[in-house]
Length: 151
Image (cartoon, one colour):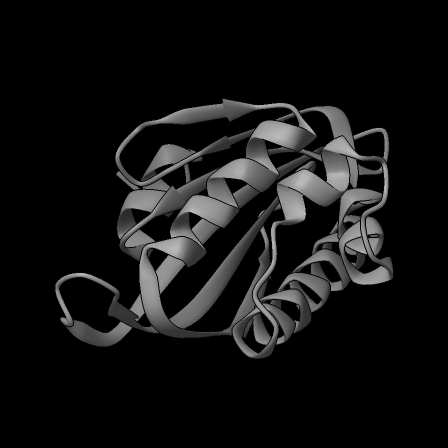
């Protein structure tokens, strides 16, 4: 099951990277499209890999429940940025139902103008072959500690 979970997260992560890239060139409201029942093919492909009860926890501990709220959170992030890019650097099988993703994010704040390149780590939990939980961390050690692999 572990390799299958890595493949699900890989498909989801690559689709999200593509969606972020598309959004940079053609900004629009993914949440509005979803509320109207008309998400584009890329958004639908990503959403199809999420469990209906998905939760996404930000690095600040904010929790977003359900697909619509997760899309709304992603949209808030994108709206707060003047420029951004996202790339998947690595996936690590954490055995069982968890996978760790390492992303590189390049961004510049829309208001502050402050920019930089950052690493974000996301611990994914899968249930029934779908992503049921995503928790973001700002460093690898925190992420591995949270899933019980480091002290």
